[in-house]
Image 1 (spheres, rainbow, N blue to C red):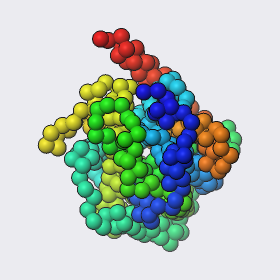
Image 2 (image 1 turned 180 degrees about the vertical axis):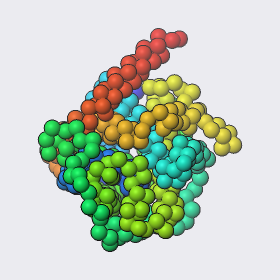
Image 3 (image 1 turned 135 degrees about the vertical axis):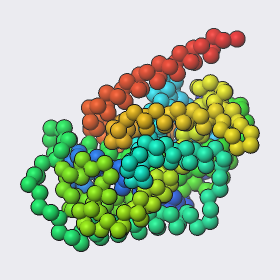
Length: 446
């Protein structure tokens, strides 16, 4: 199928109409979905890493991350509403930029999402079962992946009830933190800061903030494919069906998530200080101890488990859909697009387990978070670039947002710790080489 048929050619009137459909506000439930899919990542995992990056100055990185995330969300909505096939932005870089950027973007997506799931599960395990965190973390991943594989329906009331419960518990934690004077600390330094300037520290914190609030990618309708052939215009209803969330709803959701997580970070910094917070394996539990509010510990553990599952389920579902679409398009072995029977684990879910469980067992959640943030920023740099090419003949706000998102993603990725940059570079080179070898073998095989 040529590029014009795949959506890489001229933008026709129908495509412009579909693109305009992505500009509406969408239902208020999008805000609840975004809060549920994001708040756990920052509250459970992000506060310690942010404190280690820049202390109180980490709060200054939130507006920067908000702007970049909003630009990335706009470009993702444009790609999924305008490309006339159900692969959406999974394959948009190949349609608009070519094979090599496509491979780099797909590797960044697959490994970045796998590490994101490992980071969130690893952090939550320290709350759920502090004595056996790895067992608790693996249990959360297995539970979430089982629900994804079985395609379980979300119970009524969970859409609003879960985020309201989690945000309510976090509100109690923040109130306990600011309601008691902190114990005086003899140190004013920040443990783990490896940046050379205040600007670099704020930029590095902004990169971590992006990971903490970037749940927008998981509230856009997923790409369910009902055939094993290449994508085509007849599949677009699976993407646009049910309503594409508008930029206004996404912006509001990002704002709510950012404010909640900023309040948690400010409360933790007030009570614990940057040094102690940066070293805390379970910051909210340490915060309760320091605030003499340990009776809330069980409630916080329950909220941590629910918040982690609310993040893990859409992360693993998005990762499964990505594996399946890439397998259908022959960018991965076709066996990964298979379907099981009776709700049994299928090859896409097994591939997801391979991407999530090994880093969960061998990497510290903070390292997984930094590398995942870097890889996801690389992925969205390509998505923004593809959206910019698609809208090359237009002079409107989505095009300008795509440009801003592309440069912002690159800058934030380069501002992350050196270990995250080096690891991400090795992942991109190794992963793209494997995909290139697979493509060559596939073309040569009869």
